[in-house]
Image 1 (cartoon, rainbow, N blue to C red):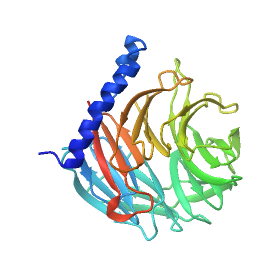
Image 2: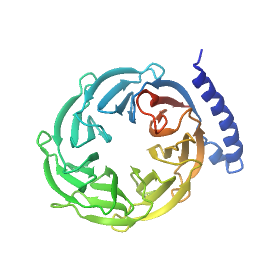
Image 3: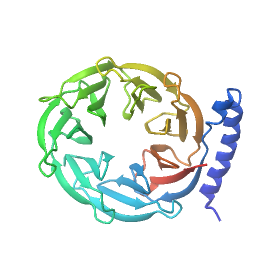
Amino acid sequence: MLRPEISNSVTNRLIVGVLLSVFVGFSSPAARAQVIQLEEVGQIPGPVELVRVSGQFAYVSGGHTFTVYDLSIPSMPVARSSHVFPEEIWGFRLAGDRAYVGANFFGLGILDISNPDDLTLVSQHKTLGQTKIGDIAHGKVGIIDHMEGFVLIDVTDEASPQGVGSFFLDGYARDVVTAGSFAYATDSPSGLYIFDLSQAGEPNPVGVVHAPAAPRDIEVVPGDANRPTLIVGAGGGDVQVYDVSSPESPSKIATFETPGRATRLSVDAGHAYVADSDSGVQVVALTNPSAPALVGMFSTPRPARDVSADGDLVLVVVGDSEREGDDRRVLILQRQ
């Protein structure tokens, strides 16, 4: 028998699915085919703050602890191993068999996640302030630090990272993501900054979009011959889309207002899955980047705080902002 909260969420999903189908049904048959429905199939217990899913594994952080879960059977997640940092984890990104973990005054920790049963700290790089998150491209890691702004380190010798330099961001440094040879950093209230990591020496932005309500959480969508490279962000209550195909002249091309307060998002297969606080999870199609469209939603029992999607799995951190610990857990959702 399903747990009461799962049974209720299934009922909500069915009701929302019907309403959404009616709403989207007024548009084209192609749009009707894009409706996304999600069903809860399992949970990961707290304490949890952040989550990432990649293939059959979920990576979660809560307090000082980074844990990997096996989702081979989504309804029965199994904790494989953990690594405890000396400081609180503020953010992390995955790249291949590495996790780049921002752990407050500890700095950036490079974690070898190739063996889910034995997570190993490869190296550490301490910044001047509080390290939030880092991501790698072109043999360099871009770091967001609340004192220095955007910090660049060379990891050619991964066991001994070397500082390259930093660029002070005018406001409150939020997030960084990389793709190709570029790093994209967001800062409130000054905007989105683009750095070319193939350039030698101190980092300097090659392009900037000044946006007073810049997103706090961003993802990159690589382009091709038929579509532009995008930065999609959440924060401040909406979803924002930037065209960064030309790094020297990026532009904001769309804003999508969600019913709740969009705080974090994950982009997978042309859809942005948005943690929308009290309004649960919103699924936004990016088929036409200049006109994002709502194609799905999932009502969560508590406010949605973080989200990560990969393939058929969508993982959502839920919990009240004023309550920590076990109150925050992960819902494991599956696309239907």
